[in-house]
Figure 1 (cartoon, rainbow, N blue to C red):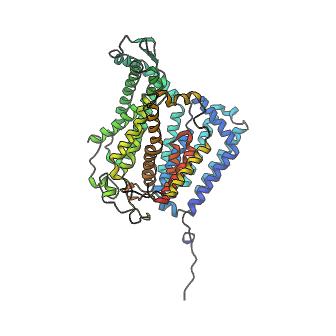
Figure 2 (cartoon, rainbow, N blue to C red):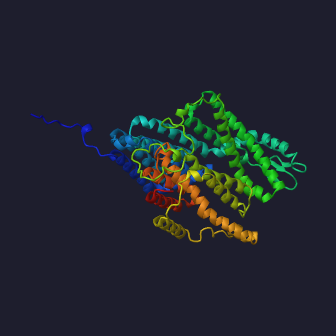
Length: 536
């Protein structure tokens, strides 16, 4: 005789994603309540903080946190899928949420500032907001142990936020200590090449009689030091398994010294561009781009040199370089494709897709030549054809990495492209025409004929061929697959997951700056075209 048994709570039927969906719904409801009830209060607090500190990069902080949570979810999809609901974490989240609501309510009626002052009010609000975000992180993850690394990342973001909030104070303090030495070194470097006597009518004004610049605190190199520190910290954390410690920590003072010296060279080069080439190019072009050029050279150069030195790194076996123990050549995805990830929609004749190098190199080349050409132009971008030529040359050199043969034209893909263009234009009537001076500066007629016609042909080719291909390769060819598996070349082009679809579309939109809403919609449309055709 069979004796009936009573199922425990742990044995009860559990639908995949049910626990995670409940947690996401709770977090979404709380966020909507905060925004709906106290949106005006939060905007006022943000404006007060921006006025006091000059910090206005709140979107960057939010995106960084969202990226960390999405990356964690991608790395632990099975755990998220089968996770259950935790009443204890919900209770902690509820307490943090109620405390934040009470604080915002007190701020909105003016009850906190008379007691704590404006600065204390900001500190209290940020502390309780951080506590609520921490409870959201703990509620988000499927297991409590997984929350510790994310909370550590949250603490890092908070520290970075405070550093960015008070960056002006740090910048001024650094300039007070180093400004005199910086200008003295610039004077020594400038003297042999200036073509005339170097003048310093004021302590931080330097140049010649024909062209001189005023060096302010925000050009003193402190922001570059902050960027290089964050870059090296992220690199050492990501590649900590191949680095020797504590000697690898020496990369921080080395990088800081190099970026400071590079800033001295940048200021010197800026003055020489103004003397030798054109003052307008020096001020409007070189000044805004040279900082990024020196940062990338110093940062990437320091990382490359560190990887070549056994003092900093250990030898990694060839079979440890990639997931699965394979050491592959750049064209491995075409020569002998590895086994695809589980569940990938593989069909006969469908390649896994271009290699990582083939996906990234055209976009990197486009970015590099864009920075370089903008550094030596002012107003009209007469060097734009160099972007087209460079990217076209890279694509041609990598042509064997892309799908061979002629592919039939997809009517659906063409229709999606046309519809995307129409929607973009409909959402931005008169785009680019709001500033008459900007329009005049972009007019190719100033080149004269036939140069203007040739420039327009390159512009059309860039907008319709080279730039879209480079962006398609990096966002749909690389990023969408990278969000599915660490080994990009194991993921066939067109493999769908919600995370890769939404995150790659959002990243595509954010790359376009102020146009991100329209660009995100365009990224969604282009991704749908990819899934429909499963070819780039």
